[in-house]
Image (cartoon, rainbow over the protein chains, first blue to last red):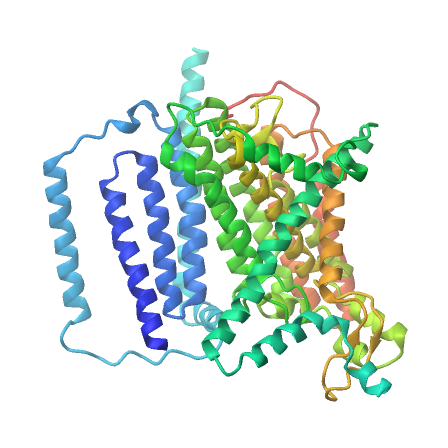
Length: 175
Length: 419
């Protein structure tokens, strides 16, 4: 009963995930593509939750579906609205995309070592937030902090670039 | 006989006891009993909160009326109490207008998608002792994760309407909510640190001094259930105000109601919605309001705990004492008190400008929330005689410093960029 329910939930999430991923790529208008991507993120979060990674699942929904997608939509709006619905089919692009996906899938299959099953490391019991925090601040402290610095550099860089463009425009306007 | 009755009589446990009685009566059919448990923890929420919505609209119109030296609605029923019912009937009977150019699919789904997260977040609110619909270890995170969906819905509603006012309202809503969400989430961190858990029920329990409540005289018991509230610590006071202000912006409420600014944008993202779709948006808005107020109460105002008349429950030595006023009464009292303050603020303050709005979020609320987290960390780790001065100094020092840094230097020419 229990395993039947969990596998049913998995299949519901997995089907939704695949369906909305396809819609994301196949959608004509950028906004409906973006909304499909939101649904995809929510389904990914759902699958993480069925794997009992509650924290990761919720973070997936909150960060990607909540914050990142909101910024995506904002950028879509700031781009030219007139060109919204005139996305033509480009067969070369589509074919190269399919080839790329196939290649990635092939690499993934090799990496997972399908066929030669390995036992997974045991899942730590109890609060996964505590364990995650401990790992982040002990074993992976350096990569964690470096990622934070990387993000900071990206933000500062964007501001710098924007100000250069604006200063140049101001100089031209003045002269 | 009287004695045992008094010992087992516990208004605090009325609903929990009822739920236990029903599940016990159905214990022969496990599937049926778990179904009954699910229904008993969800149906009341779906029934009570629309009722609260009706009361809130009446209170808001009546309150605003009094603030503006008017009477407010007074024609339908005693004191105009039937006004929400009349409004509901009017909304149901109105024509549903969809603009010709609108995106039909999203225009139809936006109001429905607005209501769903508003009710979903109620699942982690502890309405009383052992009265959490869903015991989640990531309760607070779940609240913000699901709650962040409502931003997207506002944007989609604005976009789907194909109306420039709607679109501007949607854009403003996104910019505003993303900015204030950072401060809101950071303001919710200190109570999580104090409780050592994101489980909302544990956060409430961490604000009750259990040994005072279970022993001692009535004064000690009440002190134990009142003075433990986080709002009575320096970081808690600061954090509660931060959370409250940021939640006003999250809810698009005055003075942060720029997305619906009726003097500039008609009604923002709501412009092209009529009839019951409009009512659904309003329902979502008010249920969100109650949910955030309930979370604020849970994090900082002791949730369902409060001054009470306690006596031993008599079940077991370790059992929490019985209480005269049920926990959910306290929680709802706190929620309605916060609603009252929100109405008061709406009647008092003018709307912010866009640049003021953004500056306030990023230059004031966010740094203050970060400083407050540091202050809370010191308070939690140090003994009380060191914790109080350091925490006071950090929280209020940061507030004073930010006030000095952000002081307006005269009124010069203003430059507008994005709306």
